[in-house]
Structure formats: C-alpha cells, structure tokens
Amino acid sequence: MIPAPPPNKARLAWLVQAGSGLLLLLLLCLHLIANHFVVPGGLQGYADVVRYLSNPLILTLEMTFLVAVTGHAALGVRAILLDLGLSQRAGRNVSLVIGALSVVAVAYGAWLTSRVIGGLR
Amino acid sequence: MNVERPHDLTYQVAESRRVVNWLDSRGRGLGMWAFVAHRITGIGLVVYLLLHLVLLSILAQGPDGWDSFVALARTPVFLALDVVLIAGVLIHGLNGVRVALTGMDFGLRQQKPALVGLAIVAAVALVYASIRIVAG
Amino acid sequence: MDWQVTFRVFRYKQDGAPPRVDSFIVEVSPDEYVIDAIERIWAEQDRSLVFGQACHHGACGSCGIRVNGREKLPCSITIRSVTVDRGTLMLEPLRNLPVISDLLVNMTPFYERMERVHFTPVRIAEPILDETSGRLAADVSPALRYENCLECGLCFSACPIAGTDPDYLGPAALAAIARMIEEPRDGVDVDALRRLADGEHGCWRCHTAFECSEVCPSGVDPARSIAALRRKLTGEGLDRLFRAGR
Image (cartoon, rainbow over all chains, first blue to last red; front, side, top):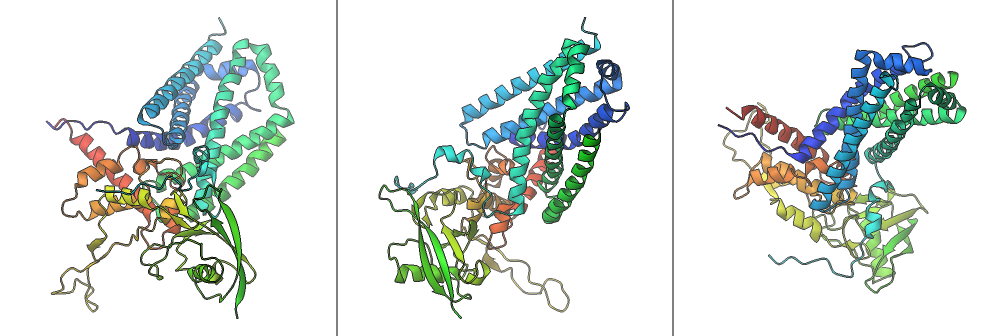
C-alpha cells in the first residue's frame, strides 16, 4: 500500500492562506450586504442584531466568516513573523501561540453570539 | 570544502533594521509597492479584527450599551475610519487575488496590468463606498 | 558632448568608521557605461575606491551594484539611461550581503546557496530547427550552452524576504532548483532538491514582489520559476495524496 505523504506545513499554510483569502472575498461581500443592505438603513438597533443572528443561514454565514477570517489573519501574522528568520524552536512556538489565540478568538465570537441570541439569559 | 566566512569587519545592516527591511521600497518596482501595501493593510486588518471582536462585546451589555455605541459609530470620525477600513480591505483583498493566482503561475505574465486594473477597480469601489458611508 | 554628472558613492572601509557617502563630479559621455565612470573616479580621483568588475559586457555578473536604489550591472547600462546632464547618481553596494568595502560585497552567502542546490551552469540548448520546415534539423546533435543565470546576485539583493530571513534560499537558488528538476544533471538528487524547495525556507517563503525578475539582467525570470515550482509541487503532492492507500 502506498503510504500517505506527511503533510508539508509550509505548502499547506500557503494553500490554506490563499484559499481562505479567496473564500473571504465572497464571505466578506455577503457579510457586508447582510449587515448593511438587507435591513433598510442597515442593522442599527439591538433588536435588529438579535433577529439577524437568530436566522440559521445568517448564523452559519457569520460563523464561517469568523473561522475563515481568523484563520487567514493568523496565517498572515505567522508568515510575517517567520519571515524574520526565527529559529526552528521559536518558529514552532510562534505557530502554537498564534494557533491558541485563534482558537480563543473564534470561541469568544461564538460565545458572544450565543449570548446575544439567547437573550443574555 | 573550505569556504571563506564573511570577514568580521564587513559592514552589515543591524539586526534591528533587518526586521523592517521589507519596508524599504526605494527604487523598487510596482510589485514591491504592492507587497508592502499588502503587508501593511494586512497588519491593519488584524488590528481591526481584534478591535471589532472587543467592541462587539458591547453587545453582551444589552440594548442600552449597544444603541449608545451605534450612535457613536455614526459620528464623522468613525465614518472616516470606516472609509480607511474599506480602502484597506479593497487593497488587501484585490491584491490578494492577484498574489494567489500569480503565485501559482496563473496569469503571471499579466501581473503588472492586473495590478493597475485592480487598483482602478479599488479606487472606483472606494469612491462609491465613501459616498454611501458619508451619505448615510 | 560631455555631460557633468555627480556620483554619490557609498563608502565603507574596515577602519571602525561608520559608512559615509562621497560625491564625485565626473565629465562623462552620455553613451558611456556607468562602469566607465566608476573606473574614471578610481583612476583620476580616488584610488581607494573598491568595486567589482571583470568582463565589462554583462556576461560575468561581477560588477553588480545599486544605481539610484535599483540593482543593475553598471557595465550594461549607459549614463543617459539613468540620469541627465548635471544630474546625480547614487551608487550603493548590493543589499542583503555583507559589504567588504565601498561597492564590493561578499558573495559567499549567495554562492553557498547556489552550491547547496547544485547549480550547474551548463545546460542543453534549445532544439535547433530547420529554417525551411520548422521541424528539428536532421543530423544535428543537441548543443550545449550556458544557463541564463550569471550568479550576479542582483535578484538576491532585490528580494525583500532575503533581507529579513537569513535562511531563505532566495530567487536565484529556487530558479536553479527549477532548472535542475526540469533538466536533471548527473549525480544531482532531484528529490532532495524538491524537498528543499518545498521546505520552510523554500518557494513558499516568496511573497511575489516580482523584484527578482524586474532586476534580472539575464532573462532568468526567477519569479516565474518559483510560481511554476509551487504549482508543480502542489500538483505532485495532490497526486501522491490521491494515490495513497492504493
């Protein structure tokens, strides 16, 4: 049996970065349209926001957008830092820290959304 | 193999300058300017992303906190910052498409005309967005 | 008619003093080459000026410097192409390489990279076609020629990433890997070169600033080589992934 090749981090990071970037173009347009052009005058009041996020389709869009933008931003910051010629160990640490911060950011965004939808119970 | 090492007294750019060497666009071509703009807007957008997440936490305070914030967000200073944000998004997004495609040897020969074309698209989109933002 | 041009030249001597800029006013013919002016400065005004030069016709890559901030071979550019009468030219050494003195840099870090990727300067020439039929000429053995790359280091100087990541292979070495893969040479481990290009300091570190191809005096187009390498490596990676498990 032909073994699966080990994942190439450098290549994977670039491809995910480029792919998420292209996906973000679409998601960002949808995010802007949904936030500012669907409701007349855009989302203004708190009630508008709650109604907006309670829509399952919108919720899916916003969560996907959050994951994609956080991932893309994290890979971008990682690339800038790795370009400074860090040691292998420092580079690994940078990747771990940025990865952890990204998970925290997405988790926070998801928690905040659930709070808003849940009516701050 | 005997390889001669750089002489100890050679002049080399200090480590601290090395960190910002990529910003040095003097005498550079269009592609370099695009790279620098892409990186600066990227860093700006990361800062905005973090700010955005922090500000959205106002939502957790309920209607009063949120509605006060929205009133603040409609002031001229915030609207001007929105225009800067849109500019950053357009530059980073459109150039990103160019980088993703040319970086894989798709349309690489046309990278300069593509850059000029996308810059025009970005300028037109920015003017439209600015009018919409200012007009409310 | 002769022009009068002011040459502002980066000066550095290993005497503990920091770098400075010296100005030299030189009478030049606008159709002379920049290297001619540099040599006249050395011969008539300052014998301590240090610079590289050899073939004087863009074939050896020894004289590479920055002219008004832009990497050039001064033996291949005329005065009139870079300035005007009573104009000023700024001459500086290449970036990203240690400066030995004045306009001369130590090319060792650059050559080490080229040796690491086993760059071989001789290649098979393009096929010779019959002029009438346009098909391969009969009874003509494949010719050899030199690779386009002069190993001048201009691309390495122009690359923004080579300036920040000291381990980055750089445009010339990556373009050389692309050539070694395209035309394998005896004794060169092509798979090892693939892994090198696919690694943390290989082709994925490039940010497509295109400066390397902008400044290359010899038609190597390293930016294109790097992009093509990426495409090739991605395609091969996907192919291996889909074949795995069978």
